[in-house]
Amino acid sequence: MSRIAQAFAQARAADRAAFVAYLCAGDPDLETSLAACRTLIENGVDVLEFGVPFSDPLADGLTNQLAAQRALAAGMNKEKVFELVRRIRAFSEVPIVFYTYYNLVFSNGVEAYVQEARAAGVDGMLTLDLPPEEADEVTDACRKHGMETVFIVAPTTPDARIDRIVARATGFIYYVSREGVTGVRSEVAASVPAAVERIKARTALPVVVGFGISTREHVRQVALLADGVVVGSLLVNAIKDNLGSTEKICARLKTVMQDLAAGTVRPG
View 1 (cartoon, rainbow, N blue to C red):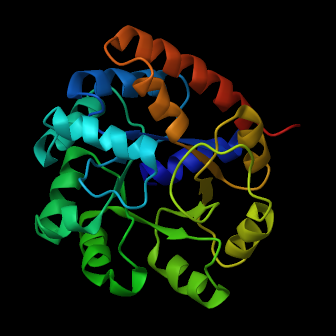
View 2 (cartoon, rainbow, N blue to C red):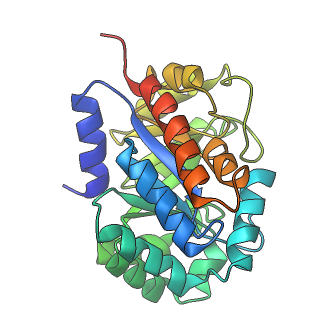
């Protein structure tokens, strides 16, 4: 069983949703990012989703754009991102999924990139701007090297296309709960229950919901419907609001993580 499958199985056995935490790799620098990841892992994260720093992160809102900018300014590149993964693997088996853009994969050679990522300890890849109809090279490389694939379903995705998307995924399905980019929102979209039901009718893979999840109540609502809950911008803001102090960043992340993770437990 893969690390990703195991994480969802363990959450399911505990009658809760898996907590998927997003951070930009290397934000605001390599050492602080490592400390931030350790804090999340020690406080209950089930899957760690790494935004790979990119100069044109078009699926991301301002919070995550600035995180990528900070990471790039600190010198993060492919080699350092893989170094960060390897250093996490020295103390944790938490599943790591890359949240990336196709240019970063293609420009390094698709198979070479997938092979190197897998060797470093990456478990899955979500290539945001790569539609499944054009993903053969990536999915073939992932299959060859034991990397899981993750694809996105949007609120505007028709049923016929959901069928094509779930056929290409092997790790989980990421349902983007709102049109537009990432960012903190005041409420969970009313369309989430019906959308999750539509996806689950078409696949046995776990379904996670992200974009805009930013309170324990949001987490609780989504946990009743989906297999996993993705929180990103709120965690990234904990870094942004405490720049200059790794201790303060980790303390804030611990508080936020413990509060949100409590919402993943389904009422008995």
